Image 1: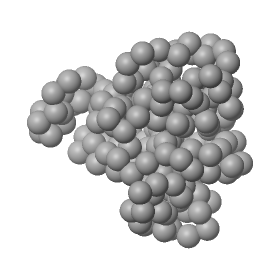
Image 2 (image 1 turned 135 degrees about the horizontal axis):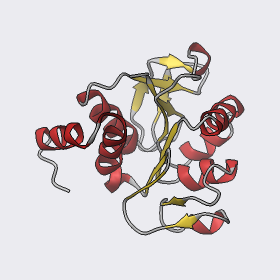
Image 3 (image 1 turned 180 degrees about the vertical axis):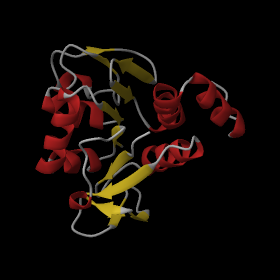
Image 4 (image 1 turned 60 degrees about the vertical axis):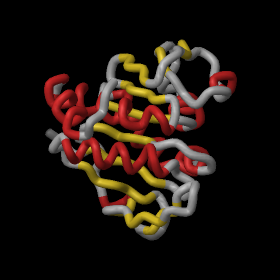
Length: 184
């Protein structure tokens, strides 16, 4: 199993990022957090300071298991403003590599890059109108091929468990969920 990279920008939604990191690591998946800032310190939308594992330039994303984008405002717009990240996301999508985004990031990042064109997806309610050509759905999580999207902070656990399911199977996702006392 290859490394999953979770990208952090100032203004990221803490629940979405930290839940994803925790759940994936509980499942035994290698996860590296990545700051798109010039330093490892990233400050979330609600003032939580996090030290990322690495800076963007420290990693080779060509064999990534997942590229994961938490949401948040201004986190999602800050992710979109990082051209090297946008290039990595487009390359990952073009080779059929796994991409995941939650909350504002499906619309603000993946939608703007064209990655969601013709796909079913979910995002934070009200952002759907900012992107055309997406089959916006109801629900907390949507899966379309190699792309997984979540609709917001309350969906963070379901979103992360779907990444586990898509990577190591439904049995492992159910085991992690049971260990967390999570009921779907």
